[in-house]
Length: 425
Ligand SMILES: *Cc1c(COP(=O)(O)O)cnc(C)c1O
Ligand SMILES: [Zn+2]
Image 1 (cartoon, rainbow, N blue to C red):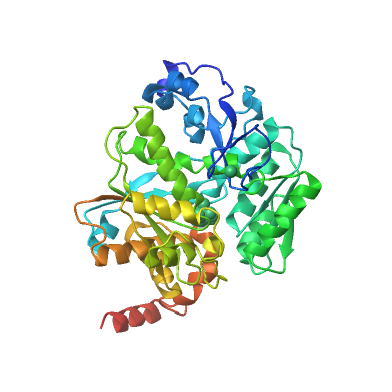
Image 2: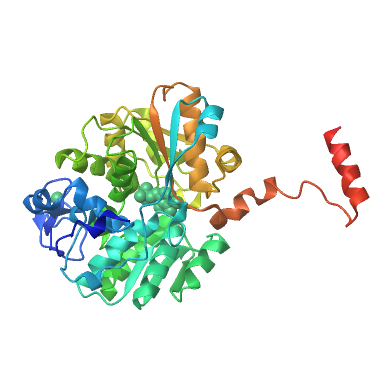
């Protein structure tokens, strides 16, 4: 039995007071806007902190549903009507021990945050749950996004489930599985002849013209809050404790930064004691603007033109790159990058040791983890959590050339026995 039988959660209450500039601190009213009117910096959600202090407790969270909405009092609520919230059961994904992978990498204690299990197969379901719920509360009638792939599927699925028209803009080089994985939900897929950064620019223009809600453009302040739930869940699933070290992939850097923010929220509200974990980031060499800046010891991110099989991470001009570098520096983390062949090795190693099939972003995370372990940047005494953010069936092409049938036999016992013997010899 869930504890919800005994602890009643109070009715929803609006908890967002305004939007605040992350650079200059200027405040703006709550709306579908993402840039500061003063300095053009990015905006974030500002909460009624007294309300949160009154409502947040371990017991209230534990009494909540097995989805990210168990953290409702730490997430943007723009309407007290629970029916306007979108909930496909996203979040509360497993945190599993990974002893076999730990042993292979020479690590002491390793856990996997398995976000391959979300409704559309990636962590993007978390951010879309937030953005779409905010959009509905604001009366927006059409939802859209600029996507490197996974966001398209997440937006399309959640929009379908609430009957909202969706337009997803993607680079026309995207994997077929990701195009199909968005179009199948009835979304309009706009394939753009350009990189993700071109797509993103186009979407900012369309957002201004059409008045649509772009989850990661004009709804970005609400969208980004969804990533915090990975951090909340990790701590709660470890028994309200922080790990020592978190390794997560970086595309725009938003998820990485928001996991750090989540740990800060838990500390501030007295839900978890202990110090903030080290935060390390993972990129693919073919799109490594943040890792390159980290190596150079600067907070200035120089945009790159992506060329990697890790398409879900292929953002050449990352919006949160600067903040991600700050988080790594402040927590004594590192940000690394690995070539594509190591990404493939990482995917296979994770699957073969732990039975978890991840997409290329997961391969990037595991391969960077392997390097951090090998060069001593993660110690054997650390409790490490690796964020595995997307499902392997989305990027079959990346690994298909490296695996296949072990035996090719005629339907005859003799043939099979002969081949088996030949192989073991
Ligand atoms: C988008 C994405 C990321 C990274 O997201 P950012 O918040 O933009 O850094 C990581 N993994 C997968 C599978 C993704 O789709
Ligand atoms: Zn500003």
